[in-house]
Every structure is written in C-alpha cells, then in structure tokens.
Image (cartoon, rainbow, N blue to C red; front, top):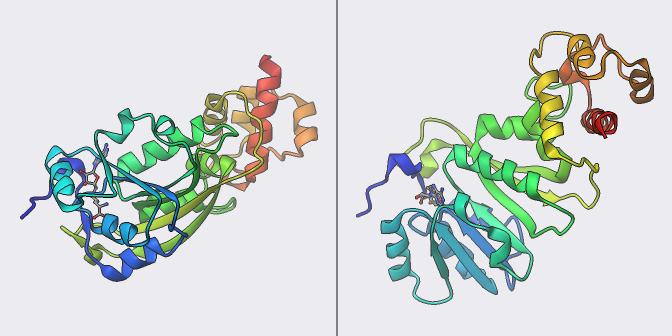
Length: 261
Ligand code: SAH
C-alpha cells in the first residue's frame, strides 16, 4: 500500500471516467508523450493503452519511481527527478504532448516557465494540465471578468486555452479540499513579439497593482502620461485594469520596450 506524501502534493486520480476523459482529449497513438508527476501510474496506464510511440514520465518521489519501474517494465522511460530541474527540451527529438497532474503550485510555476521560455520552435504540441479550479479560472479569464489578470494575460500571450472539465475532490485519493480543473493548451503560431517577458510581467504588475482603481496612475508611472501612446493604442485612462483587452497589454509592453531601446 502506498502512503500519499502531503509534501509532494500527492492526490491520486482514481476516477475512471475522468481518466478516460483526459486521454480522450487528444490523439495519443504514435505520438511522443511526457507525463509529469505520474504518481502510482493510474493515468500512465491509460496513456500506454493508447499506444504512444515514445513515452517518458518524470516523477520526483523515489519510492513511486521505483514502484513505476516494477509496474511498467517495458515501453516506459522513467526519470526520477524534479520537473523543475529537468531541461525538457533536450529530452525529445519530436514535438511532445504533455500530461500533468502535479501539485498545484508547481503546475502554475511550470506553466509560467514554459510560456516564458517558449520561442517559435514549439517543443510541445499540447499541454494537458490540472489546476486548482480557482487558478484555472484565472488562467482562462477574458477581459471584463473579475478573474482576468496577470496570469490570463501571460498565458494567452502564447497559448490558446480550453477548459476540458472540472473535477470534484471525490475523484482523488486522498481527497483534496478543493475542486480542480483540467486545461488544454495549444501554442499560438503568431504572438506579439515582446523582447523580454519580464517587461510584460512588469506592465501587468504595475497596472494590476490596484484592480479597483482607474489606470491613470499606473499609466503615468510607466509612460509619463505620454499622450501619443494613449492615442495610438486608444486607451481610456478612466478604465480599470480588467477592462483592457489582451492585445492592449501586449501593445503597451511593446511601447514600453520601444521607449527603453
Ligand atoms: N498524476 C498522478 C499523481 C498525482 S499526485 C495521478 O493523477 O494519479 C502528484 C504527483 O506529482 C505525485 O506523484 C508527486 O510525487 C509528483 N510530484 C510532486 N512534485 C513533483 C516535481 N517537482 N516533479 C515531478 N513530480 C512531482
């Protein structure tokens, strides 16, 4: 019997309906697959049944990695490491489909890291990742929505995002306290050419420092009240940060980079 380790966010998926839904959201046969945090291998089993061409899993827990080696003797490349320490690009020759039900804080960290590092070389075809529902709602939020903010703007910059389903605590063992959501990501072929993603993070940090207030103060702080930028981007300073659409934030970042170059 395997004891779940809280420190590694171990909540194992035990719901066959949900497991089926996960492997059915994208074609797996003959593809290169990476699963992060496979745990006891419940999802791994379903993925293997779909006959991928190459299948690698990355599991941090030594005990679980050993168990996986016993359970799946063939057809599976098991890496016993922390996903945050792995250079995932160097592992594959072909584009990858990534599945992950990781601890929630790590899902968000890894997603941000992958977005920031994603160039036009698209090392992945799709990401299928589990998040705490509340965080998923922030990732998929559109403008004029109270969940819209820094995470939505960062994620939408390079990815097309779809929600596959919400998942109740009952589908896991041990049961988490909160609801989860499964998101499906596809890289955008075209995205705004921001030279340094830190500038997008800076713009959104300053603009969203006070969501209830009009954007006059953050705008002036960054652009010194430059009327040309207001006119060019058609920005109304009486709006609140959540009222500016995605494009406006990417364009504001481009302008910011132009000013500093
Ligand atoms: N995907 C499995 C297990 C989910 S629990 C399922 O759905 O049943 C989360 C898993 O991620 C655990 O196996 C945990 O050991 C692993 N994990 C936690 N942090 C990790 C990290 N930084 N890198 C790789 N795996 C990690």
